[in-house]
Length: 298
Image 1 (cartoon, rainbow, N blue to C red):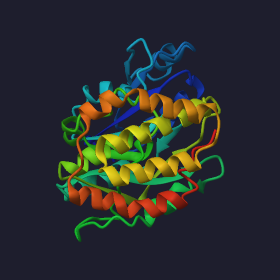
Image 2 (image 1 turned 30 degrees about the horizontal axis):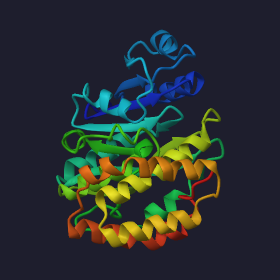
Image 3 (image 1 turned 180 degrees about the horizontal axis):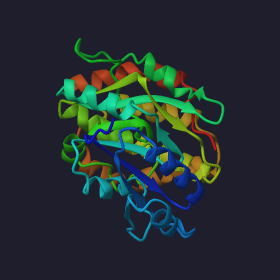
Image 4 (image 1 turned 30 degrees about the vertical axis):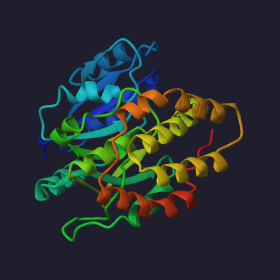
């Protein structure tokens, strides 16, 4: 059951054992997808290990940590109509790439399909899954699943051309909630995003992570997206909510300081979303305020 429609893109940084496990799972998929790995400046022998154990994998070595932009670099090499992202500690279940490609084939206005996330080693659903499954975003009748306001890069198959035309992940955001800006720009261009419950990606969270930096960057990126794309009142509302609810510590303070320091750039690049896209995002605000899966911890 080979399927030539989708290329898998993985970014990694100093997680050699996790990456090799992921590449082993991807190599065993019946679809036999091409796999491109961007090694974001690893110093633990990752590139040599990939070349030795997985010589069919296309390996990109930019020489520094590009964060999410490492995916952009890989997508430049993609020649298939669809691209599936996963992290170095996650892998697609057999048949899910084909299932996502089938949905994208059938629905020409669909840009992204996000899969159910199963957390290993216990096989439990990630808490975010229920929010995806019950998304309140209104969508057209033809949409094959719940409409989404954003997506999770580590669990999504996208239309390659749509990704490129939207500009990919913004280099300034680096990593941490970087999907929100791209998702909004896809929606503004007329694309739809959906969740597909019958598709699965497995996530075995790596212990090699800087949770505090990820939280700081996530808060900063949320603020940047909010002021780059949301109208004044929703932007103020979300900013005040973050200020009230994030942990009161140095990481949060630095996040707000970094966001504020970039105000000239934000004002220069600010482009408010079309009213219909903004209306979709407003429907998500109550769920975002109640969410435990979206809390800034670490």
